[in-house]
Every structure is written in C-alpha cells, then in structure tokens.
Length: 325
Image (cartoon, rainbow, N blue to C red; front, top):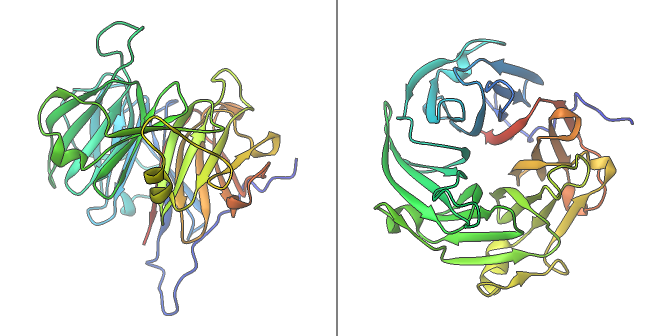
C-alpha cells in the first residue's frame, strides 16, 4: 500500500511571517507515557521522556510553554516546562504535579484557568450502573489544585470545551452529552446530569471528539476488539445541528454528517481526534491498528474510504493536542 508516512500538512504562512510560526501536534500514549511532538513547520518528530509509564490526555500552553499531561501510572496531572527549548529525545523537566486524585484518566480539557479531567473508573463499584467523574482543577503558573469533582450518570471518555460548554462522550454508546456553562455552574462535589444528550446516527461506540471553526469531529471505535472497523464523523455547523436535535433524539447522517471509514483509512480504534479548521485537516490517535498510529486526513469532508496523508507509528497512541501559532 502506497502511503506517505513522512508527509506533513502545514498551515500556510501569511506574507511576512518568520520561522517563529509553529504548527505542532502533541501526542500521549499508553506504551511508555512519553510526549511525542510532530512539528509540521520543521518536518521533525520529537520524543520527550516523561515521568509517566502511561498517559492519556494532553494540553500544550503556548504562552507558558508548558505541557499538561494526565498520567495513568501515577493518577495525577503533571506539568512539564520549557517545551520549545528541548532537543530531540530530551527528558522533560517536571515543573509541578497535582495530587494523585485520579483513578482512570482518559482526557483533558482546558478553559481559561480551569482544567477538567475525564475519568472513566467505576465510581460506585457496580458494573451494572453507568457512572464516571469529571475532576475540576484550578491552575496557576505554579500549581494545579483540585476544586471539586462532578460525578456523571454515564461512563465518560473524551471531553471538549466549546466556549464555556463542556461536551462529553457517553462511553459504550453512540451518544454525546453537553454540560452548559460547566465550570461556573458546577462548583461543588455533586452528581450531575448532563444538560442535554443526543445520539449520533452511524456511530457504534464513540471515544474522541474535537471542535474547531464550527465543525465537530467524533470518532467511532466500533468493536473494540477489531483493528479495522473504526471511523470518524465530520459535523459542520455543529452547534446549530446539536441545538436543533431534541434531548434524547438522534442526529441523522443524511444532510448533517460525513463519515470516513474503510480499509484504506487504517482506522480500528480511533480513540482521540484533533481538527485544524484553517487547513481542513483531521488528526487521529489510533490505538489498535498496527499497534498504534498517529494519522491525518486532508480534506476529509469528502468522506469515504480515505488514505491518510500522514501515517506515523506510535504504540498505543492515546490522546492529541493540536497547536498552531
């Protein structure tokens, strides 16, 4: 199969721009917990060693030059500093960590000085009842402090802020939930139902989500045991379509969504997504196919059985964060 495994898709620079322009994809994995950075401007890959053995959930703060990563081996958030100054295969400097509050972190979402971690561990110890937790931290330049914990009435996986609303994947289903004005409305430890939940037609089991420029990307892992039945959906004009779908109802594929799936896509268990609206590129963390890959798809809104424009092997790839400056 002819696949360009070294190809990168870069954003066009404006006239007069300099080499300070940055287009980067930050990736965590559950094989060794390191941070892999794909630098589109330099056509370069960095692997930075962390203190974790497995990690899921990552965020890069370009203003502070720090990475926030959720460690599954120490069940805490770790903050690493001076990222842009590091050379290939460097060891990340641990700036500070949160307390070890987490049990099974899956995703990280940041809104202002608030950091939210989705944790899919069984809260009540009863596998027959669906639940999960959203840990809410306050961040400063030198600390991460747990403010409160929201217990969900569904198993949670991926999360994404759209303005002040938090969208959350309802794990083991094809559903997407939203908590409106999340951090301001939920300031104490409590069990809270979502403001609204809808189903997404065509998806078997969703895990990852990404939003940019009015478009939402939702991944479909299908059968978790299969390395070839995955896909992702592209929903343009997402907010109006979500708003027009009644609570508990289904968003139809026809006229609303584009699906990318098939043998050429190399999608089996796409567990996380990012989207660059300016370049119309979808990035996927694929956890199973080939042992793990980081994939990208250019102009994916054509839909169908697309060949990746970027195909990088990364064992047990678990989460992504796209940064462009």
